Image (cartoon, rainbow, N blue to C red):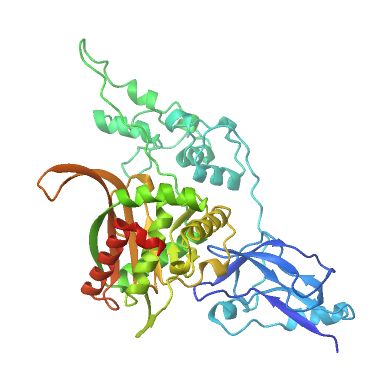
Length: 466
């Protein structure tokens, strides 16, 4: 009997529910060997290279590159040896059932008979038009060349398209005249309605000059008396319709995790500031000696890691009713990327030299900005550092990244006036630090002791090289 094996959507981490085939590195009918890259799979925040675990032939590809996201457990392709017949492959696909998970079970339900759906004709135009208006025009096959835009700068609105789709009015040559009532819809542009409301103009008796009798701004202004000498025309606000943007998959994941964290984790906050003049001065010399371009954030990551191994009660994760305490500081660094906020991990940062920390953070930031972070780059993390100081943010409160027990928010390094020991006033550079703490796992005194150690490491940075 031929050896036929399924290739399904893998599951990386408890948060993953679906993935997308970004690119197939092998094609249907091609043989591959163990260790060869088969495809690239994108999840909410990472792109992983999937390597073959055995030698085989790609006999059938069921989900192509760029297709919609598929739930975990979905059959993506069938691998077998070259001797397997097409009938055996087809029978295997027909009888395949995904793993018994909530997502997979839903995917495995028999598909309902498809109903032919007319594909809307795409409209290509340089005229300004709202997304909803364009969607409606494409669905109805409307030629927008004859549509008059009533929005700002002639923008075609959804109501413009609705009005253009109305049948032309026909004269009634017999029977009683129809009297308009307040319940009947009056077709007027939003701007015409606003101007009429400001000046108390009744729209009911107005005969619109726009397409199919639509009342335009000019129709209303024609009924408003001109301002007297020395008067001014009343200000009329333009349309302020929002652009509706649906959450992408990454934003959905971030929104769900942050909502859960804020609702389920009892946050409390500890705030302090540290003098950074010594650290800034030492950084310039140390970078020259080490031959690197370590940023101030790299030094803060090193200082944080040393503080965590001295106060291991802060270097924890919370898993249900269990507390996981770690001997090494795996620092998750908040990075803004094209895929949203990601937190790649600098592992065992307390054991690294400053130049090694700088090289690792640069590598992770480059991968994040290229959208190439893998699961191994994101997995774990015992503590997070979020630095918005480079944007001029003086201080902020960060939301804890579960299951971690705390996160450090770093503000800008600002020159401030301070009172010295002899009563004189001078200037120094200070950095605001805010520690967000999960009160279930870390007490206030424990967090305060960690912050005091971190402040000391920043103000006496020679300790970072011991």
